[in-house]
Amino acid sequence: MKTRSIPTIIGAAIIATTAGGFVAVAAYGADNGNTKAAASLSAVPNSERNVNPMVTPAADTTTPLPEGETIAKGSDCFSCHAIDQKIVGPSFVDVAGKFAGQSGAESTLVDAVKKGHVGTWGNVPMPAHPELSDAKIKEIVSWILTLKKPQAAAATTGGKKFTYTVKGKTVSTSFPIFQAGTDKVTPDVFRGYELFNSYCFRCHGADADGGSYAPNLRNSLNNGMSESTFLSIAMTGVKSKGMPSWAGFFTPHQIRAIYEYTDARAVAVVGQGTPKH
Ligand code: HEC
Ligand code: HEC
Image 1 (cartoon, rainbow, N blue to C red):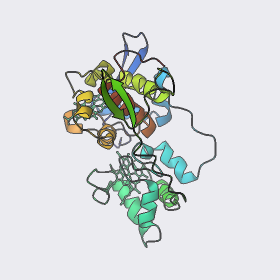
Image 2 (tube, rainbow, N blue to C red):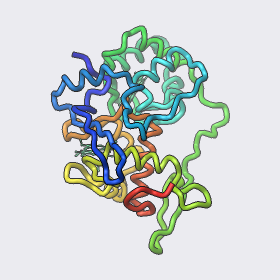
Image 3 (tube, rainbow, N blue to C red):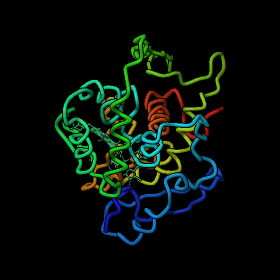
């Protein structure tokens, strides 16, 4: 049975009421051979998988998209790729830059997406996509090959640091924790709090405090885990150790919000409980 779309995420969906009183829906369970549950879940379209009313993804824009982009959005591609930014895999603009105009580029890339690939861009593997027809993959790949780097290389917002003082110590993050001029956290940090306490808390502990099943992610970040490693592990999972893959379930924006919340907790700027928002 081919249920690649979210093979490692879900064995079950558990509904629990948290101390805060809101209903949290946690989907978890590594690839434990529970193909029945996986099969019934894979029958649910991506758009309907985020069942927690508090954490439904933001609505898409209404501008009509190229066919290939639409198919990619309906699959798991954007969990790991963005158009102009490396996430877990290379940006699609970089893929186009490397392959466009090369003979056989399209069939090479169709093959890579279909069967999975590793080694061209690093040592993180891309999973296979047996559930997508060749025609659909071709449509996505030919769209990717049309992409161009944005003219002005304004791409790097990177490098910017936000500093905070906690108990006399200065800490910094790569994103703002608070809305300018207030003590309210940004919508992203708050969204990250909601998502963490809906989907990650069961193994990693409520409010990222650590649990008995999985590493304390505040320690991971304080011990030097980079943002990109955090995002890669969260999207790819560590199947053999029971860490689910969240590719196809979360958008990069949602995983980044979870990263921001966890990092804000790691540097102790945000405390336990519901952050002011
Ligand atoms: C779990 C993360 C993940 C998902 C999901 C994913 N990719 Fe990838 N993708 C990667 C990684 C990592 C690489 C780099 C592989 C390598 O180094 O060869 C990659 C590479 C690629 C490449 C370049 C291949 C090459 O030979 O250089 C293309 C094209 C691509 N992905 C398209 C897609 C499309 C289309 C989808 C959705 C149908 C998709 N990816 C889904 C992680 C992912
Ligand atoms: C079913 C339990 C479970 C759930 C749910 C879960 N994880 Fe994990 N996670 C694990 C386990 C177990 C590990 C350790 C894997 C290993 O030993 O390599 C882990 C490792 C990680 C790591 C690497 C930490 C390190 O120090 O190596 C990150 C990052 C991570 N998880 C993020 C998340 C995020 C984000 C979520 C929620 C979206 C999440 N996890 C949900 C079980 C889980």
